[in-house]
Every structure is written in structure tokens, then in C-alpha cells.
Image (tube, rainbow, N blue to C red; front, side):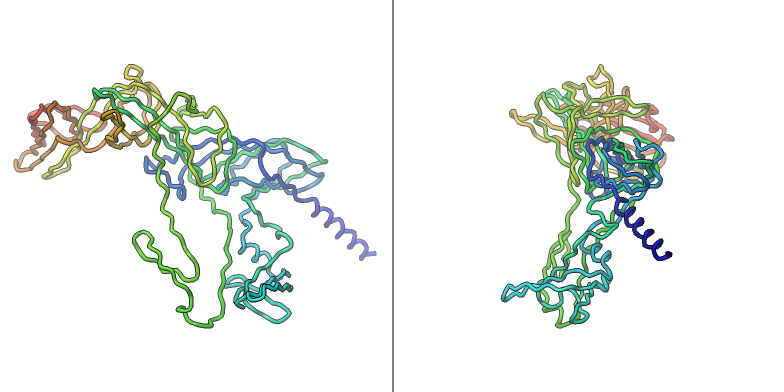
Length: 495
């Protein structure tokens, strides 16, 4: 009688296990909001090291059996922060959440097959004859050890092409990054559920293209919104938006899913000189590679925005969201894995600017050029009056009807009404020389070899006092603003 009860319990357990796993292979709809890395500044985006994050919302239709089951959301991002995941649509049915970190790979497949019988297929190089036999995986940590009817041997050490074949994927391995939740349902249900989570491996920035007018007093300003997805998961046909501004968030490190390759170690039969050696130049150094090719990939450069544009670009729409700005892309776009995508964000046809030269002199004797800066005010009167996210700026001009590169600079975040400065490069023809020969003061001399007067702004420490000119306080600096005459000079004595 006890044996019958045990058999019945085992049958019930097998029946529960058979219906325990429900898989949602992919979302039907996706929305993603990308947040910028606040600590990156305007350094180029590096797909291998993105410090921003995104909020992903997926809509899926699932069918659940009665009782407890494991619902597996396949195809989530590998950078998902599991504790941030929220499942809406199942009520109180969700019992727990887990991120499946073991990804399907040759190494993880063998690890999960320890002690299991696999099919070993060998091909004779000479005759092409294929022979198959059963093999039990005995070890995988330092090479792969197999047991066959002929004894113990190491994989791929016979000199013959060898392949191990598994009839199924072991439980717990996922071909895609997966979030699993344990749920309990009083009866069979079919529901549309929404999975929302925070994920790492995303970032964005603005890339500006400015074209200087012939008179040098106006620019046309155009900006691309550059989205970067460093994850291995693509977000296809997603409702996409980006947020500009700094939010309070503690960085959460999420280990990537484990996908181990196979390590092959054979018993010594010769010397390392018997193995083909490749010498590869990587980063200016030589790396010796034995047995296989190793490729080194430099961080991808930031894509240069195109200066040619028409009037029908897909333009991100700006919205105010509390203390930050939201840029919504009006059409669905695919934010592909390990790639960048650009969407037009800002287009201002005529912005008034003033060209000045600028310097923050160090202490002691100094000689050097000044920096050329375009200055404006973020107001509608100057042709702006909108939030300007930080980003790189490419400044173009025209010569003989063709665009030429004048300089490259950067722009910080600017709210409406703020002073905007766009550094564009070294100012040719304007030179500074500072001496400390006077025991009581520094002498700073500016010379201008250009045929036009140049406005110069010299920023000095807050405790600085001008002895022959008036200094004013601005943005945490004492400022000397002076017009250096054409082919002339200006002099400041200060301490």
C-alpha cells in the first residue's frame, strides 16, 4: 500500500513538473526610456562601457495553468536589474522573481551535462567515415574529460574531428537572457501582462552641427540625439524616448549572464613549436597567440553627425518632465544590440553669436595662445530659448561654396536663459604672455596680430585684485573683459 502511495506521489510530481514551465519568447510591444550617464561628461560613447541606463516596458500575452508554475520572460536585456522588475496584470499571483544568469554556450552545456550520456561523433579525416558512440562527461573545469566504452580520454585530443551532441537543453540554461517569476493561479488564465524593469548598458548624448554665417555673427544649429545600446539584446520597433537631466540613482552592478566557452587541454605530445603561432599587433604591442586567433577591438568612436539635412527628418519632440527634459521620438525605432542610432533633435536656423577669445592663466610665467569661443544667450531673442543637452559640437564654415571644418568643441547642459559658450579651438593670432618679474603683481599682456579687434575674457581666481583695470565677479571667477585692438595689445597688472 505504501509503495502504491509513493508511485502515485511520483506520478503527481511528474505531472506538476511537466506543466511547471511557461515560456514567453518575446514581447509584442516595447517602450524604452534612455537616461544619460551623469558622470561621463561629453567623452565619446563606448559601447563596451556604457554608464547610463534605461527603463524598459514590455507587453506580452501569456497563458498560465492552474496552480504554481514558472513563467519565463525570454529576451529581456542582459543588464536587467532584477529587483527593479515589476509585473502588472497577474495581480497577486507573482510569488518570486529570478534572473537566469546561466546562458546557453558550449561550456555551460557541458557543465550542465556532467555525469550525463551524450553522443560523441568522430569523423575520419582520410575516409570521411563517421562513427558515433555514447560518452559520459566526467570533468569540464580544466579541459573536457569523457568516459567511453574504450576508457577515459580528453575531448579533441585524438587528432580526429570530434563533436558532442546533446538531445536536449538541460534545465536552467537559457539561450537568451531570461527573467523568471514563480506564479500561482487558481485556474487556467490567459492575460496580457506588462513587464517593466531598469537595465544597464544604455546611454545617449547630443551631437551638434553648427554652421557659421559669412559675417561670423550667426550660426545655424542642428543636433542629433545619439542613442547607444551596449546590450546583447535588441529592442525592436520600440516607442523610444530620452531624458536629459541628472536623476538621483545609486549605480547597481549586474553581472552579465554566464556563457563559458569550452577549454581544451590535451596531454603533452610535443613542444609549443609544433603549434602554429600568430603574432598580432594590438595597440602598438605584439601579442603572441598560440592555437587560435584573438582579435582586439578598440572602443567604437562617436559617429560624426551629417551636416547635410533636408526638411523631413524624424525629429524628437521635447517635453517637460518635472525638473528634467524628455525627448520623445514620434515613430517606433529599433535600438539594435551593440549599436548606436541617431535621430534629429534640435534645428535652429539662425542663432546670434559673438566670437571672443578666452583664457584662464596659470600661476607663474606663462606664454601661449587663447581659446576661440562662440558666446550666446539661450533666449528666443538670440534664436534659441530651449533646453540644450550637453554634447559635442562640430563647427563648419563655407569657402568657395563648400563646407569646411573650422573646429570642434563641446557644450554643457544649458537651461533657458543661461549663457552658452561653445569652445571651437585655438585662436590663431591672439597670444598671451604672463610674467612675475614684479614682486608685487603679475603682468599679463595680450597681443592681437589680426586685422580686427578681438574681445578677450580672462578668468582669474576669486581673491584676485586688478591693479590697473576693474575686475568683475562672474560664475565663480573674477573676470577681466577687454577689447584688444587690431594689431595691438592690452595689459593687466594684478595680484
